[in-house]
Image (tube, rainbow, N blue to C red; front, side):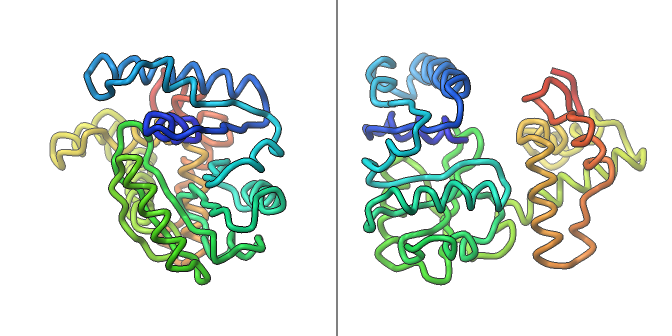
Length: 268
């Protein structure tokens, strides 16, 4: 997600600082951006030279380098403590007026904002995956988010070529409150033998006109991410309908996380 956001920002003309904990991750991100941009240029979606776009992305493993940033999008793993660690560190580095956003797909924006000294300049900016291809961005205000911050984030989303939609700060927001329980139910259907993975996905593709079946989509998202979001929904609403499917937990325990590990509901 982070590399996708960086690519879109660079393609829109912004200078980008791309931070990660290891140079190997940054190298993989740059390689992925190079491949993605080549496809988009070939299809006529982007007219600028690939080298020029990539030239606007500066990779760094030093978080202190981000003190030069005018706007920040945090996109670490979907875990509150992991996000808190990065957000609190950024809060100390960034200038007081800088807007700090989170790409969280389910965690409370109000709770994350409260970890900082800038809750008025903090909000959710939830991009869809894959970022270069998906136009939606969910904008989520925290309880203290200012109108000025919301207006600035919305304007930036539009400059990135995205369609911003406001969602209230509830677990899962709009997108994942609907999507992830559907995926979870598809896993239940698989576990209970209602159909094979191929049958379940085919029914949703041909019967409901979805571009991708829910189990294949779970593999794309990452089964660990799907489980984390279901846990946020279950903890947030205390409603048994959001209970993660035992098979989903078992798959994550086995490290069958989907495309990123080569095996999930399908083999890659």
